[in-house]
Length: 445
Ligand code: SAM
Image (tube, rainbow, N blue to C red):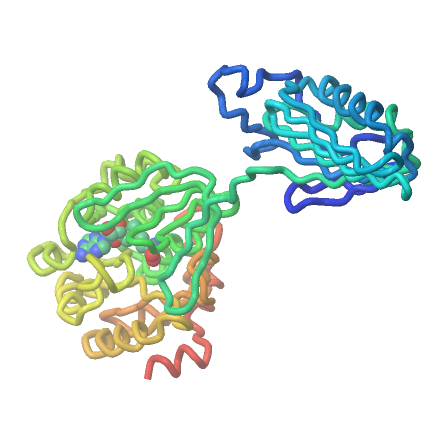
């Protein structure tokens, strides 16, 4: 029967058939590299299969072995093992306990050591070999077989110096953390407004984090950006002018610009460093949207912008951070009132409103404020995998209740005429998104 495949850390015990010295999958380093003792100035960590580690440590049990009370046999076995592994012998010391007794010994090598402890009366020897760098301790096994002729050998392998992967832990919610393995950090910066980090992950692709809070990931950004853009655009049916507040990654802008009848999109982002670094490291999110001739990019506080602008919009999308830091004022009643004043007849405001299961207070406050200002205020839902906690609520505040009553057939016709490609949005999902679970309706009261 084939031996089980060793899995790296933690140590695995591998039973070997007598003819087999290296379990399948166990490392077989290429030719020898010079040891540190030879002064070539490398740290000799091994880079293999995406892992970086110090070297391989084998724990070897010999059963039914011979010559275990013979110092000469043991010395020869150690010397041959060192040579077979292309290691550098520095010192060898053996201690024999009595005439027929066992032997304790160690070969000190530049790459670490081979240790042996024998029980001749049991035919048993415990051997451990640790070699750093590319030295291959498995090459010692045939020499141990030759010297001690054991009936069976058991080997367990441990990779030493295996660095644990780096993890980003999002601490947005009290008493709950979400972790992402970080394979590479591309950018880290304290901007004028927030701490910005962009890193790669194995599961979610490239990720943008602001002030320790996940903003968007390459893998699931469309769950969010499509739902911020297409429901209001297709419900309204004749949007020409759009204002986006925040949204510096460019994903919402990209989705809005898919609609041919859009005349102008003004995007007001407070932090120029977000736009610059997302364009550079996350180009798949904006996909050239910042270069579109219909885009007008303004670096300003969205609160001040809506308070001062004389322009009117068919649709305002608040693609904001959560209500802390620079995004806090984007949840205030004053800001919502200024948005309303900036809307044309039939205009719609949509907002990022967090995950109600974990951010219930935010939902209740926003609802109270929007309801007092708009003819129709509610939430509609999306479920973004990396915004942990179930459904995410998007605020819907419309100057006309009719915007929410557009029948499926009309949405389907508009969607077909728009001829846009989506991965999350469909007209049926659009309508269904307004069906709120009881816990969310309760949270709005
Ligand atoms: N999808 C994200 C989420 O739900 O977590 C939002 C992402 S988007 C990158 C949020 C943007 O809002 C950030 O780039 C941030 O700089 C911007 N922002 C925060 N406060 C703002 C303000 N007062 N005015 C304009 N933009 C703001």
